Length: 474
Image 1 (tube, rainbow, N blue to C red):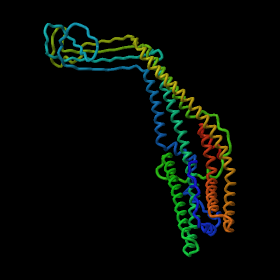
Image 2 (cartoon, rainbow, N blue to C red; image 1 turned 60 degrees about the horizontal axis):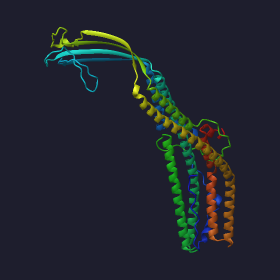
Image 3 (cartoon, rainbow, N blue to C red; image 1 turned 135 degrees about the horizontal axis):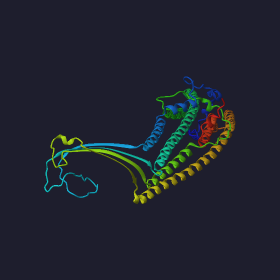
Image 4 (tube, rainbow, N blue to C red; image 1 turned 90 degrees about the vertical axis):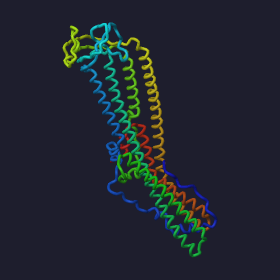
């Protein structure tokens, strides 16, 4: 449980016996416990409604949905890699035409020059132009394209598994906060009962001390006890506001939400066997493994050659004529010669094997790490399922013992008061019984909620949230 217990018992100073007489004047314990619960505004917010709000309104779940759509768009982009490419280019230049014989490799910023050979340099410039259209299609990639397609599909599956796992995790967060809020509200009502009880005691003891029937220390002690009960109530109210704000954030709602359904504070869940379902966390981990293996395949197939069909056409224009005549005007910019070519090309990087091997090995090791994490997740979920079953059994046993504890605490309190009135018990004995009654009341109101918390832990281990609602009787 995540709620503070009552502070430990303090020994009262001698002479505080009249405090217990004030307890009798304050009325029976049962009357102090009959304070009505504040009604909720409007219809209670059921847990199913809260989960639906979180699914449709939580911004980070919407972000996961966009990631799935982005992965699907990447598959579409991968399909377009099958299409041929047609690249168009055009250029108009103005420059000199000095040329020399020789061959240069296309490295760096080498700029080719074309023109007739002459014995001197001439810096007279002419216009020139060139336009090209190059088509390329790679129908045969020796498995490179299918590997890229498989990687894109694995990425989409991973994104979908990530969204499913985040939705399940969000459901667990919402349900956990929902139950915590209900438990805190129950604890607040117990604290409010304590404040009322102590307030009556404080007034009674103050009246007795003002008439000189009790020592002043009794009034001081009653005032300190009243302040302590008020502080305890303020603490639990702060916890309630914190859980209320957290639940609103999880649901994607600004401000306060409606009162949660108190069903989970009243009814005990039945014992049901968890379903045999694939846990979303394991599904996400498996999709991550599949994605890693797909990436490794893409890397290894990069070493394979690529067969391409090529086709091109181009035209050129120049201010330098074939007979050595020079046109220094704009007429040289018009294309005058046209060509075409078709062919088959193969690209294969022979010495790329070491790089590909090293990169593939790194990806393989990352995938092996994911497989180890998968086994770790399996172990943790198995142990969590065992723990959840034990907690559910313990919660059922507490549900049987809590009413017995409360009845015994009430009886012990009444007996201690009777013994004190007869002079057979001390004020410390009665105070001890009072704290025991307070603890029993707290345990009683949290019993059903604790059982549902155990069912939620079972649901988290099973990976199927419908298992939680199977415990709710229609």
